[in-house]
Amino acid sequence: MFRKLLIILSAVFAINAFPDRLGRIVNGDLAVVGQVPFQVSLRAWGTTFHFAGGALISNRWVLTVAHKVSGRAGNSINLVVGARLLTSGGTTVRSDQIRIHPDFNFETMQNDLACVHSATTITIGQNIQSIFMLPGFINANENVQVSGWGAIENDKGENSNALLILTQRTISNDDCVSVYGNVVYDGHLCTTAITAGSGICSTDVGGPLILNANLVGIASWHPLPCGDSRPDVYTRISHYRSWITSVTSV
Image 1 (cartoon, rainbow, N blue to C red):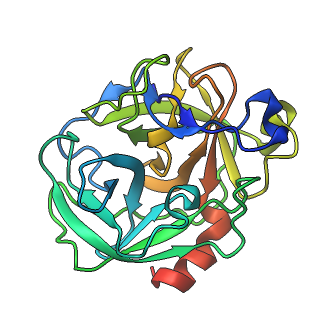
Image 2 (image 1 turned 120 degrees about the vertical axis):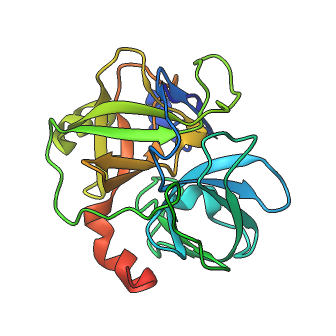
Image 3 (image 1 turned 90 degrees about the vertical axis):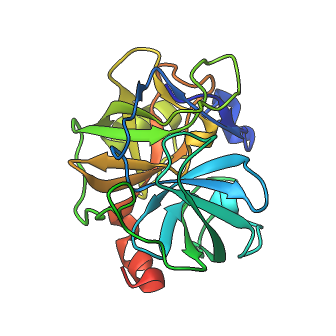
């Protein structure tokens, strides 16, 4: 489902826990027009290169992962909303501000969250809508959906042109720690595949994880190869709800 794209960050990753940062959804289903109206494609300004996903939480703010936007200038990102295909459609607005979580750690991927502000107001409509952030703790054994344009084959790095959706199941952080060890923190939310061989990959990161049409996570990192039997790891929205509000007033 979601494809290869994260870089192993440190010796801690000798077990290939943190993927590189390149991306895809392996064994996902095609999204129909308007099915994921809060999905955002982040692209380098002045190009059509998709490097991460995002979730629209208001008409001015997008949530994504810090490791994809850290070090970028505040006005260096094109935010494409309302698109199903990478090559056509959607509305493009430019960023003017990036707020990285102050405790983000690139080596451990802890607090991997960022808020990107649009320079202009995004017009909300049928195919462009913000998503509600669920404030409560998400337990294990919930069916959730993640979406993105990551590659569809585990041995190739090309992005999928069409937006893909994948259903996964949440697991407890204790179960996630049993696989990855102490690189899993309270601010993480882990999922496991329902369909064997499915999962997120690099340019899927930053994308929304939803439960009953509510945002519960942002795709952060995954094992290599993508879609193996180990969990995918998300930034847990409920853990950072107060920080998000302090930055965005959402």
